[in-house]
Length: 316
Image (tube, rainbow, N blue to C red; front, side, top):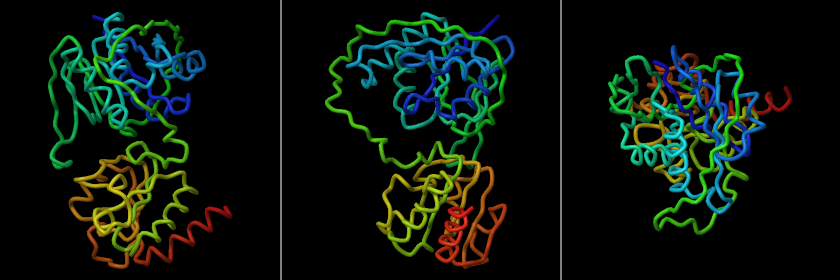
């Protein structure tokens, strides 16, 4: 029996986030039809989406004053999901997804698994990590609708060209039962790249010595189009905010490249970045734990190497 698979597409300034394409690749399976759910008009997204195997694009339309209300967005999406008889709903395990997907699961009374890195749609099996990455769990799900949050960058995007049609779905006229958006702002105007979505991360630890030296990392990150992360030591010392922490009690990240500068690589930190594609470490201590948990390393002072690397990138 053909399954209808729904994929909630995240946009950034009207463009499709790259992590969506890996998610679509993961969702493709035998005897499935892929539906992409987009909030708002989707005409300019059609070519990209159909190149990855989407067959139907559902443009969910809301009144302007409802666009930023998460309760209304969730209700509109669940109505569209039901209208198109979706069996499995995919979304990204980003900050936005962590807000939206649990609301959808609650409205649908559906099982929810976040931070998935693999699925078997024939058997309804979902793979995710537990206990700070110490255990990889395979979970069997049951229900008329399943809701899955996919770890960004966990899957390499693979094209599967086809043709897609756009269908509009009117999601207006919904209430939010007391939930009111008082004010919104352009928080992304000068925002750094999200840690959980970044393909490249430069992270600093005790070896950065102070908060001012993290400016060196920021300049280097800008040249690499990378996000800036930090160890718990750097956060606890007040050098950087908690939002930059990678580790067991911080963000779990999955970049293609992770550059660790002056980081010892404790078990707690490693739990947050162990699934990185390539790890490169720079530390003055050749016996630091990160040195045995990386692909390449240099025994050197990060504060000497970072400015030189930034110069090379700028001039290259």
